[in-house]
Amino acid sequence: MAFGLNRAEVIGRLGADVTVTHLQSGGRVANMSIATDESYLNRQTGERVDKTEWHRVVTFQDGLIDMLEKHARKGRLVYVGGKMQTRRWRKDGEASDRFSTEILLVPGGRIQFLDKPNGTNGNGSTQAAQPASAPAMPAGASTAPADDFDDDIPF
Image (tube, rainbow, N blue to C red; front, side, top):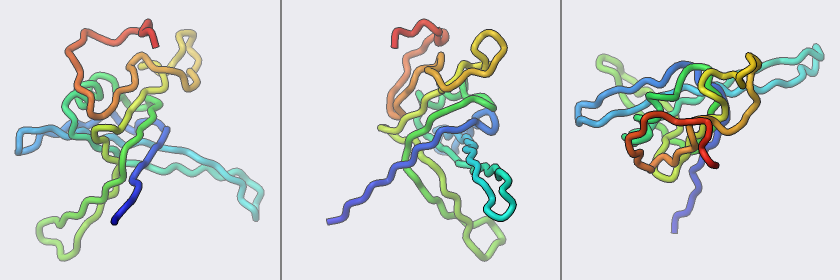
């Protein structure tokens, strides 16, 4: 009996606006890059070293793609929970395979914006992680057409 757990969760900032590509099959795919930061003290120099790690995020869910097109902008603070996936492909004329590891948002996955769309709390200062104007959305949920999201969502 095989058993495993494949779950990835990150909180970070979007490195660019979401990119939506139309596939030959008629579907769409949304791609995002999320940067996570960490720092540590260098033992030899005693200086603080900052390190940024980049994470690729992909989804094929139509309702989620619609929401991301409206709200996923460069610099937004976002939580993503999905599963890890490694793809392998070969470019024409190359002898070796290429690999890409990414977080795949599938039904049961989650994305949540942790700041307001403009990144401020209304008085010009940057906002700490708080619920966003775009609510959390499970990756498999479909969205009904809506005019826009408000700050007075009751949850």
